[in-house]
Length: 80
Image (cartoon, rainbow, N blue to C red; front, side, top):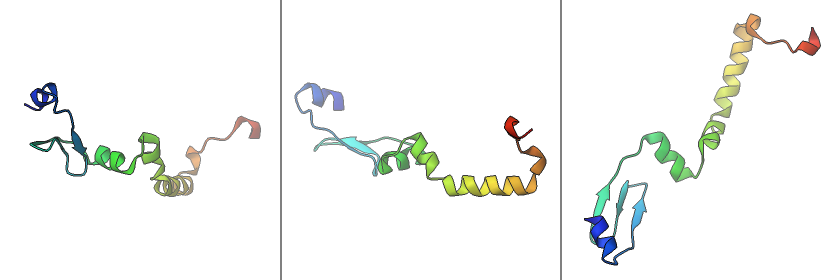
């Protein structure tokens, strides 16, 4: 039905990501997004940006891993 309205010249659509609706002044239809992708669209970030928002957690894990598993560290060849 929405495509028929567009074909008839009623070609103004609104996509509301927060409400997960797409439609025009007459009708709205819901769509689904997983929570991560919805948040990324609303915040205007890509996968790299989303990952960078986790940087404090990543750095905390790195410190914990170095402290608890020193045998797993990679030693640069310049130091051997």
